[in-house]
Image 1 (cartoon, helix red, strand yellow):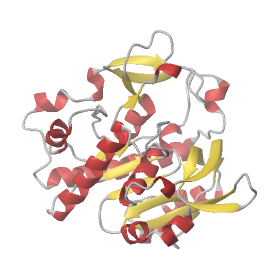
Image 2: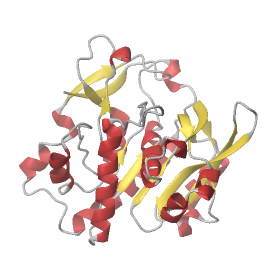
Image 3: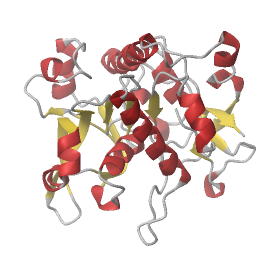
Length: 310
């Protein structure tokens, strides 16, 4: 998973690290048994490629970055690295090797912008924060018509559609009309789920909330299963606003973690993506970096367990 930039304007007092990843991102990877490595977003691309050859997939997390400057077209380093990784995954698949990619929220937006030729207008403005919503399945039977949800219990898929369990926290979405207008997107991805919300001008916008590559192992969700474990310890009420945390949401998070784990095991099985020694593998694990706390960030105004990286 990539680190994120610790911008000066919201750096809390005493948080000395230039990059970080939130603990709930690590937990999503680890929950079903996969080891989590953190990858600095500004790592030189030659070093990154060497590391990717040893990893078994990549998870793009949520975040607050301005990925592409709308006025200048300048791409953030995080986005540049993400583009390299997505293209790497495509190239590996074309060579008969399996390197899965999964994105949530900002990561979900990113993989679609990359496939849509770096167009910022891939995104439509739709601010939804601290709200849990139902999942509207775009396919008749997600357990039969998708790889991502093929092993989710049917009872859980029904609850995702009937209960407001999917946490949204975003300023942008990818509209269904964008898919209709952009062959790059609709030829590459299958839409698995959507949602509909009213825009400031009162028009309704239907947007995608779950996708997967028709052929390539690239998938993601707009909503945040990684934050919805069965309970939250510590933190303020503001940090919990809009979240549903119960046995069902915990089970949903675990199922997504199992998706990551199954894909990673398939990658490992191809015999190419692996570390030569256990010592080298241990050297990139998240646990090598100092655990700290991060506070005063948007709706997550609380002490958020964080791994700080310099």
